[in-house]
Amino acid sequence: MKHITVLTSAIAGLAMILALPAAAGMKMDSAAAGKVLAQAASHGAEMFAHDTFGGSRKMHGVSVTCDTCHMGGGQVAGRLPNGKQIPSLVNAAAIFPRYNPNLHRVATLEMQIQHCVKGGLGGRPPAFGSKAMVDMVAYLHSIAKGQPVDAGGMPK
Ligand code: HEC
Image 1 (spheres, rainbow, N blue to C red):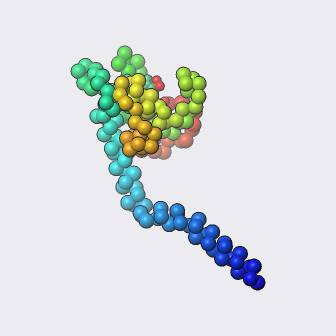
Image 2: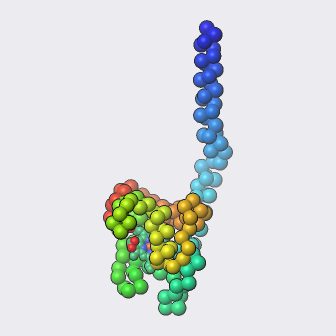
Image 3: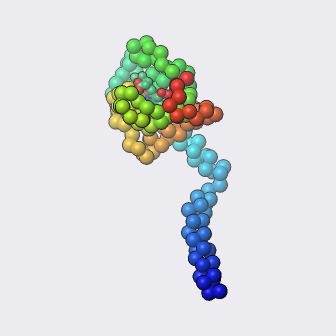
């Protein structure tokens, strides 16, 4: 009988420990959580259109931003400075991670963002987990809403 009591209280204790992180996450209701996420995506959109990430490159006298190549916030086909068309970013967040033949390894969306900041903007790539990186990822996911998750898939 005593053994059962000990076991029961051990299980109860374990259940409480396991429930703690979930309870902490419940402090914010889903409407409020959605608002914070929307704010992150909207800051990402702003950076996409205006931020040079410390780069000083200009095209036709205008500072280069993500939108210089990925026009319309990345929601329409893009164009490189040499006139070459590139796909839009509408499903970008849904098709990473994927194998990158130049890097000879699987690359994530974050790695691609860093690559474009460095190579495209000549800027300082945001660190993994930084606010700038998180907000840019949130923006790219917001424009990919409803796109089928398809790691390794083709850009649209
Ligand atoms: C000078 C042009 C240029 C600029 C500026 C640029 N990119 Fe890119 N981006 C490219 C090219 C070209 C590709 C195609 C793949 C590659 O070369 O790696 C690409 C690919 C991408 C992809 C992957 C798309 C896919 O589905 O394969 C993402 C995401 C992306 N860019 C985000 C950004 C973000 C965010 C910025 C701004 C911080 C940015 N890019 C700035 C040229 C640019």
